[in-house]
Length: 365
Image (tube, rainbow, N blue to C red; front, side):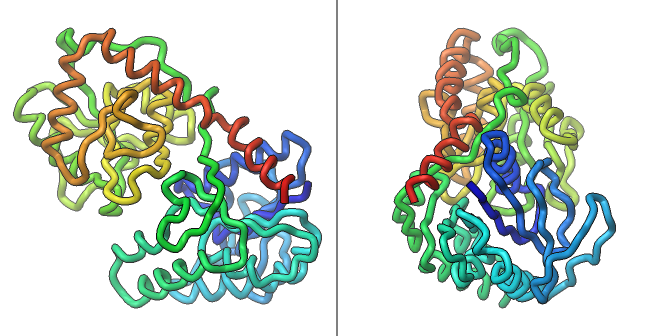
């Protein structure tokens, strides 16, 4: 099977990891997988063995070597440039594929309007984008919010990445397939601490600037915990903290690649992921921390539940504090019971299972 994945540009967010991993697993299973991307995009942050086809605004396919210096994106006008360049490029090559997989509202339009003959066109919905654009200010955000809403009405076969997106708002997906996790990297830690024994408690979170990710509530909770426990520590992966926020017992760490990120999850006693929107969706910090055998406090992202994690209300730092204190006073046996259930929940998210579900769906087109 020949699969084409048009993207707006390679990035560091979890959605790009999904696409790279899917491509790698499909290639191992004998399929051809190509990415179609704007010439100005950086090289993939998440490694992929797939062929990368780059296009310019006229839709001409260009030859570029990995690591070669490229023209940077401008301060404005990128959406139109990507949209028209991708559409023109698709007119040249779309008919040579069996499956074309859109994965963002800006890629959905060129894919929907391209003539692809035998190719089946899919739209992998990894989030309800209008909700995120609605949180941003300015005319550009309003235009993108409107376009993303329209994208769900295009003539594309939608696949959601979580069951909450089945008939969610404007989304009309009939199938859902989650993102995956590499169990060989994000493997369960070999030993779980006994929290009842006195030692510095280390709390972890992934720092994000977007208000919807809830980083501020982790910081508020930590400040309150620091008044209770004089030894508690905070490790924030990747920084992205509010300006001027600092604490003597808080440290920023910047993992380089998945192996170091997995080591980070296993280095903390508790991982907190308190997002505020689209609860029930998939969230990589939750997936990865659970896979690493780390107790997770979250507002409710797959595959977390009350049985395998600690669920707190949205925007409630006091509830986070209470959950941290509950975990830290729990016996090792009680914590292990939840972590065993977390390991069971993660098994269906392993990449081999996820990639196979896509191919099964594609073959039924």
